[in-house]
Amino acid sequence: MSDELDLTPHEVVRGAIDESKSKLRNKLDLESSQGILPFTNELYYEQMNPVVRSSLFTAGKMNVKNGSHYLEWTEIFSFGGGSIHYRGPHLTVDHEVVLVKLMVLARGRSLTKPIHAFQADLLRWLKLDAASGKNYVKARRILDDLAAAEIRISSKPALQRLLAILTSPAIAELPDGLFFQSYINNRFNDQLKMIAKGLADDQPVNVTMKLVTSQTHNTVTKRMMINLDPVFAIFFDGVNTTLLPFEIWDDLDRFGKKLLSLISSHRDGVFPVMLEKIHEFSGSVSEFEKVKRRVKSDLKKRFEDWESKNYIVPGWNISRNDNGIEIIRGLKAGEAVRIRSKLNLPPIIDSDDDIERGSDRVVNQRAEDFANSFVAPAQRHGKSTDS
DNA sequence: CGTCTTCAAATGTCTGCGGG
DNA sequence: CCCGCAGACATTTGAAGACG
Image 1 (tube, rainbow, N blue to C red):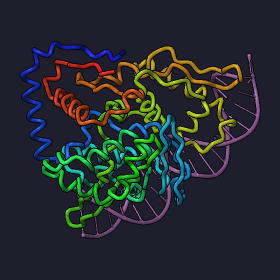
Image 2: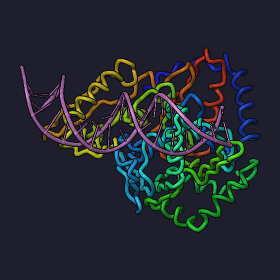
Image 3: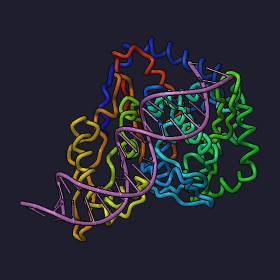
Image 4: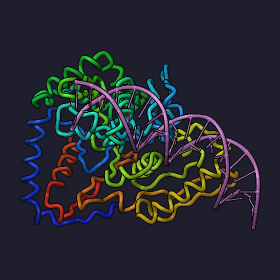
């Protein structure tokens, strides 16, 4: 296992951790609800792995203004085994920026309650000039797009989590848990047998969800109230998600945001991948054959830059295989994206062996990790994974 | 084949003005 | 401080060509 987290003796900080942990638990119990909220905070970008590995949010900005829209369920390009289908307006990385920042605002709150934000917040997130009215139009359109979007994901851990919520009586003990459970129940009870059978038989089963379920605009207070789809939370179990420090992610360009997240989602490095697939992953509308040389040289420059910043480790390589096909090898996240701000970055878990998580134990473990990050920042403290 | 340039069209951002 | 509209200005993109 290669996570180079410093292992600090527990005893030293034990007291502080226990205290901050219980403080966090109380906070979660009091303010939040079902306890399966995303544990992200202002320091970390967090996104579910199925999304990170897909081109759901495209790096390109073409075909956006002219209202490109998937009317029917369409399979989105995706690395790895899972599948992701989409229906709705064309989404770009700008949409993702807004979404993940909304998720940060949702931290510690019940997802059954709305998030409050100003449109000016969106402009700040997107690094747009707040003095320009046109930018408000763009921000509003992004929200509308998110509200219209529907995604369908096949993810075993998420389904297991869903099943656990549906069948576990324990969650109802939490303040808002009953509400959440009945919400899930109303929505999925009919499919319960199908989900259980699919899991047992190892067959693909999908979960359909929206991103933003509703948004209202208060013309008096000028504030927006935005509801996220609670089912979304199931995918943010803190285990099947990828984290990146915002201070890095915020400064990446569109494609960079996607690409570095993809690399970071593979703890042991990205498997060799065709250059053409990376191009497809970017969501570019251009024909690969016509732009491949450009793509390759641009990518080389990008990786050289990232290597110098320790975003990725040396050893990567783009070259042809015996069949003359360009292959990218040896991509692996570097130290800079793993640990930042002297805080503990929970390990990124990926392998098939880890598939059975999404368990309460792991989620609780994640909460503990998160709690640890409230300890004095000087004491960087890490743990290794159970793999 | 890889790197560097160039170009037009498509898009994105900013400026100035208006109002609440 | 919040918001909207037009239009000017800037950047990005896809595509193609020059050169070694």
